[in-house]
Amino acid sequence: MNRTTILTVVVALASLGGAVAMRPGPAPQVSYEDTGQLLFPSFTDPSQAASLEVIGWDETAARNTSFKVELKDGRWTIPSHNDYPADGTERMGKAAASFIDVKKDIYRGDRPEDQSSYGLDDPTDPNAKERGQRITIKDASGTVLSDVIVGKKVEDKEGYRYVRLPDQKRVYAVKIDVDISTNFTDWIEKDLLLIEQDQVVSFMSDTYKVDESQGKVTGSDPLLVKKDATDPEGTSWLLGEGSTPIAGKELDPFKVKQAISGLDRLQIVGVRPRPEMLTLQALQSKGFFVTRDGSRLYGNEGEVKAICDDGVVYNLYFGEVTYDSGLALTAGQEGGEAAPKPEDEAAAKKDANRYMFVDVFYDPTLDTKATAGGNPDDAAGAKRAKQLSARFGKWFYVISDASFKQIRKAKAEFFKDAPAGSGASPASPAAPAKKEPAKKEPKPAAP
Figure 1 (cartoon, rainbow, N blue to C red):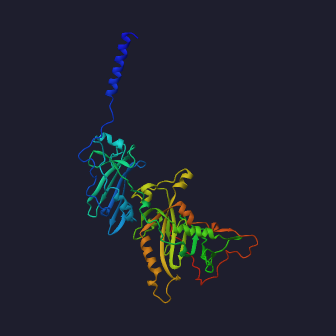
Figure 2: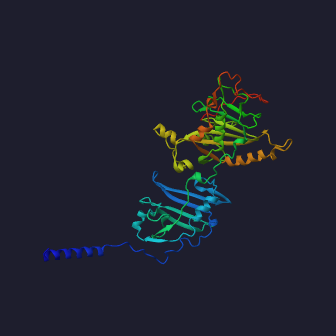
């Protein structure tokens, strides 16, 4: 190798070394005077929280969403859903605790143009690219305990999220476990009807339909079944008086149990406020109709009745289908048009939900637990019915199609093939009880 070649190699190596030396290393972690300080130093007690609001963005509807839970007069409610009662004590405690002792761990920048990359754009900005969730917690006096926009997860630090205060541009990565659901069904009482399977001693199903064009009920064929009092296990059912068996079939106790189990586990997917003075328009818009004299209610897809051993009687009426989704499904939308039925049949079945009307009353003649000779108004069943009536009297409910089909079955579905040569069918009617003269049901008022 000649001298020229050696000099060339030395110069090249020197240049390479200089380039390596000049390569930028990892950006040094910048600290400010508030790094490591608490995000909300004055918020120390989760029981202070009296309201929670989460503002987000619905990409499908291209609009803001707001979900709020608030303590009013000692009771948790959901203002975004017409003050529907919330089972909020435990969930609110967890949500509030998420923001206590959270520190400003790592400074990530002050440039507004970088907020999108952290998912921290203002969720109310219609022109934003990557919106965060704004979560605000206040105490009973309306004083803000915490107010923050929560963005994306930090990729290289498990359990960390990007956050910023709404009126500031500075971004921090903080260690936080945000356990806040904005799902309506997560905040409400799971057991809607407050009914136990073992309480039900009689069950009636009638899958009639209301012909709205002619204003009449068609296909009414009520099936009444009663628990067999002679069965110590309480699993046998008999046909009630007035119900006719199907030739060659016997009652299927599993199907009866399935329907009653559906009542026990019934959960709603949405609510609508029921006006104090029910009008024909309010009822018919959701698929419910009354007789001309106002004495009888019908659902356009039939009804079921469950009679409990304490004399409490549940009537469930099934109304119109709704294909709404999101907030329109869970809370309804003022003045908005109902979502149309999807053209695809599979999608229509998937998206179908149904209105339900619940009526509860007490019948002392059906109460097997009341004290003989006692005042019916003092009976436990009477008091329970009064509480339930107040609970259901304010709302139209929306239930899933799956729940509807589990509870509301065609008469034939309650029967199975009788064994060959079985003789008397277990579906034969129970001994007739004292029977009132049959009443002819009047036609519902025309829509």
